[in-house]
Length: 248
Image 1: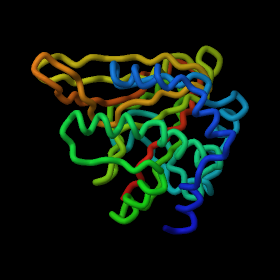
Image 2: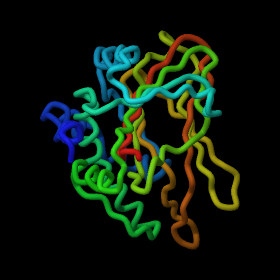
Image 3: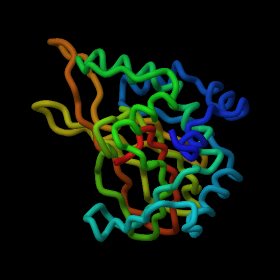
């Protein structure tokens, strides 16, 4: 593993790990199983949110920029961080991964998917990097009035961790209006089910990247999920996306 990858995959500091561990993981796990998403209340402080959002103009922190309208992704833009990641994201990534691995493995077993994820994020990143998925995927998104993000999935390669986390850095009602996080669930032979997730500044949402198991009358079946952001009515909205697999 490269030196930058080691920096990004290092263990979380006790403070960050303790903060993540202090969340109500029984409730989070139950919501993930029931809805495919769960809110992580107050994951970041307002000051931490402001610091992360302020990084957006500094291109030296990022490996690439995507203008959504050029690709039919919606309106707005986002930038992928380069390694080494900002300390806070580099610490949150392994701490959150460690808490979500049990759900990921249980979901795969229920769906008959013969893939299990190692206990540490460093070990999972090695799996990605050995397969040529070397580029970091955590990203910072910026929206203005009229911007939105079309429903999509963040897959990026052969190795995909089935859960990811988005953290709202802006305060609804003060910094922007509109711009709700939206998740849709496509069920076999049924109409799609929408889920709108209300968030405050510093809240995060953990959600399924691709699919999740659902218990039906005839056993477990898979449902397909996509996520996006509704139209910003006014102001500006920043979000951090924490994706646990790297990209080719």
